[in-house]
Image (cartoon, rainbow, N blue to C red):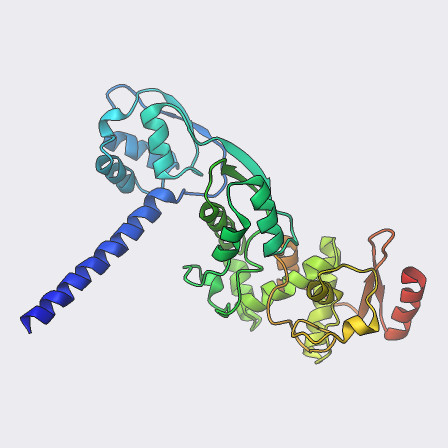
Length: 336
């Protein structure tokens, strides 16, 4: 009995140690914000570690003075702090700030990357493989993670990857940033952009974030302007309400891996759960990573009398129709 208790206590201690280490790592590796400009921070001669930590916290550069002090003590860096003026940012982690304040130089050269609205996970992987130290293989592995602590993923089925939630934006990253650093930066950005009011409105509509992002991914690929996105959103939500097929060409493009001005009858007969010509309602999940305009449109649609639309391949303008006969005429006019 005593041995069992000792084993249990030992296992519990190990578990607590692991959890503590994970929490410590999170605190020193995660910046206060994802994006921010650098600002001046001054250490006066004679400033103590406690004073420096308090000043960093008051200036809005770190989350917690406790973890800054703790990190420097653990790493035995307290005596190496330099009295000088520094350029640091709240987008830097405690670890990075400590490095600068103890060496008066940054080894973290930065670069800008731009993730385009409407890129899917594989396209992002191709881009990162070329522009960063993140390989496509490692990227694809990360995007299949299911053990992430983000509330917005609560309604995502585990069998799906993170398509839809890797927020397209312009990011400043360190040249040697890890794949995980970039990955978490995108997810944290999504968490920030999908604000509390938007989440509340989604819930009040009786929808889930998973459904909204799936809808937003279709909208992102269908039209370009904010105004058109809102109208398409209303049109699609009406079709779902009326139990009509969405007939989204974006889903055919997703299945075929090819964009066409007009899809054939044979294309619309493809056997796929993502074929919204054959299946009613939303596709199983997002088909791309939508930007904030498409996400807002999915949440706040504009309902009109339009029932059909197409894109003029010459101008990129959206051509609306109120009935199928008008839609057929527009197809003859713009797509022949």
